[in-house]
Length: 295
Image (tube, rainbow, N blue to C red; front, side, top):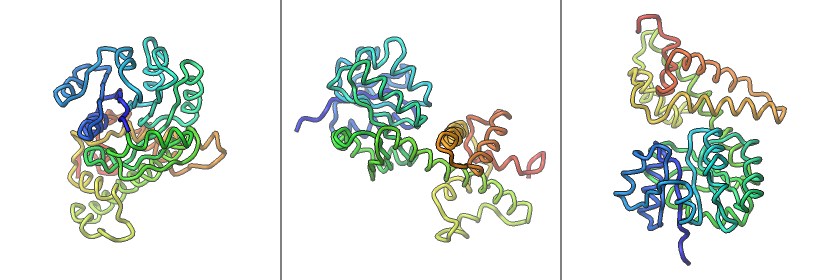
C-alpha cells in the first residue's frame, strides 16, 4: 500500500523530533513553519521545505499540525493563505496540538464546509523525550474511518493511539491528562519547599519515594529540577501548562463539572507567569514557597 505524502506544520520542540521520526520511517514529508529558520535543518534531514502553505498543500495527502495554541491553529488553518483555502476533499488534517475542545469541533465543521477536508484531533503526551523516542501517547477524536486511515502515520510517533470518540474527544482527554500533571506540579512545589524548610535534603526525594504511591513521571522530572533550582532551558514551559489548565476550567464550565484543584493550580501558575516566568520550566513554581532571597 502506498504511503500517504505528509505535510507537517509547526516545527518546534515537539514538531522537529516528530518530523524526523516520520522521515526515518520512510514517509515523504513536506514542512512549513511560520519561522522558516526552524524548518531549514529538516531540509538537510530529507524533508521538502515549502515556502508557503499553498505549496505544502499541493504536495501532500495528510496535513499534521503541532502548534502552540488554539489561536495559532485557527490562524494557520483559516487565515489568509491557510490550509482551508488550499485544501481538497481527498486530504485529511491531523491536529497534534493541544487545542480547546469546543473550538476543535467548530474547526472540524468549518474546514469540511470550506474545502471538504476531514479533521482528526490527536493531541500527544510524553514530552520531547517521547517525541524523540516515538513513545508518545496519542488520544484521538474523529470518525472511525479517519482514525484507521491515519494509524500508520502515527505509528512511528507513538507507543499507543487511542480512539476516544468523535472530533473533540481527543482534546478533552488531553485536558484530563493536563489536569493531573498541572495539579501534581503545584503540590510538588509545596512538597520540595516543605522538605527544604524542615531541614531535609530535597535532592534525595526522588530516590526516597521511587516506586512508592507518590511516584510518577511528573514527580521524577520536576522534583530534581525544583530541588536544584534548574529552571532554564526547559523541555516544556510554564505557559503551556497554564494554557492547558485554563482550557480545563473552560471545559468544566461548559460541561457543568467542578474543577477547583485545576483552577487553583492555574492561578498559582498565572502568578508566576506575571512575575516573568512564563518561559521557564514549571519547576519554577517552587520559588513561590521559598523565603525571599533564596533558600
